[in-house]
Figure (cartoon, rainbow, N blue to C red):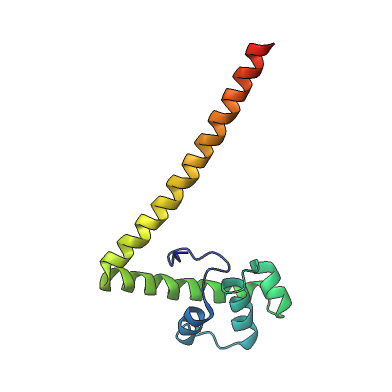
Length: 122
C-alpha cells in the first residue's frame, strides 16, 4: 500500500514512520503522542483516539495539525529529493482510482443488463 503523505488516512503510517515523524513534531505530551499513534498507526478515528488517551479534543486537534504539517513537509522533501518516487506514488494512486472506476462501471453495466433482460422477459 502506498502511503499518501499529503493526506494520511488513519492507520496508514507504520510505527517506524510515525516514530520518526513524531520526534521533530514539537509534541511532548505523552497522552497526545499515544492518541496520535492510535490514530495514524492503529487506525482509530480521532474521537476514539483522544478519548481513550485522556486528551482534550482541542489539544488533540492542535497536535494533529502540527503532525499533519510535519507530514506535509516530509512529503515535499521526498518529492524534491526523489521525484521519480513521488511520480510512482502518483501512478499508484491513479491506478487505484482507475480500478475503482472500472469496478463501478462494471457494476453499473451488470445492473443495466439485468434490468433490460428483465424488461424484455416481461
